[in-house]
Image (cartoon, rainbow, N blue to C red; front, side, top):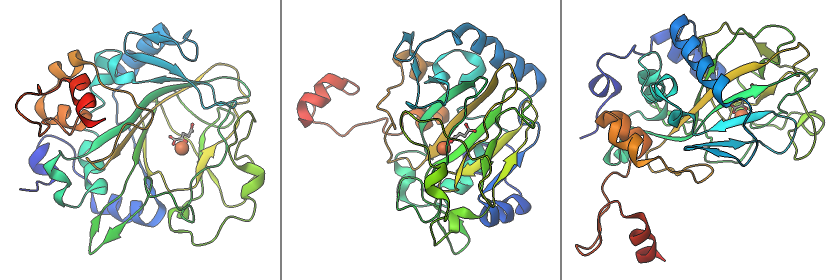
Length: 299
Ligand SMILES: O=C(O)CCC(=O)C(=O)O
Ligand SMILES: [Fe+2]
């Protein structure tokens, strides 16, 4: 039976009517104070331990990664870095809101309520930024916005959490409000679009706003919103994390797999969000959760 967010996470903070209105209208909402100062401090302590990682390096199950331009370091699979980020998986400040936007109640619940297809912390330094990407005229299904008869069916609803204050000059996330519904290409898109090996930002593009956040605030947005960031022109680091939630039939964006230890530790609902397909329908001679056996079987 399909369940709604309230049944799955009774203690989570529900989505409000105003949030539903704004998310539909603008493509994003901001949850002020989603993390307590103690939670923010714990995240920063964790990042302190990983900030010297290089692209391609593994530390435990955390992977150093970048987008190939001037976007800074991503600590992929950050939910493997310890309790500070592990609790993001089903954090009560946003999990029920996100689930509402991902799925208004359809058969995806057979695999679980939703799925995290990417999770990372991002460290950006002086001069770094991310160029423009996404937008409603984009044909990407994976990041789509959809609403019908009062239910949402969005793929990739992102929870971007500020881990320090992000104001003017800090390289704030930028977006063009309502662009998830755009039917026409932004006329300036080519000059600002994120591209491999190039340093791009959204500074100066018409119609965009900077989303200034205090440490602990969460920006929840559908990925089809046209977005990117300003360039960081202040010293120091901009620290955020991004958890992307989508339909339970989705796959890891980059191909990462959760560690057996993490799966073992998680509560049943959080586990389903990390690995929705928790039970494979296999012939009796193939062991459940034996990935190599499964792959041999499939290939
Ligand atoms: O770094 C930023 O501010 C934007 C992040 C972004 O593009 C995303 O989370 O999809
Ligand atoms: Fe993005």
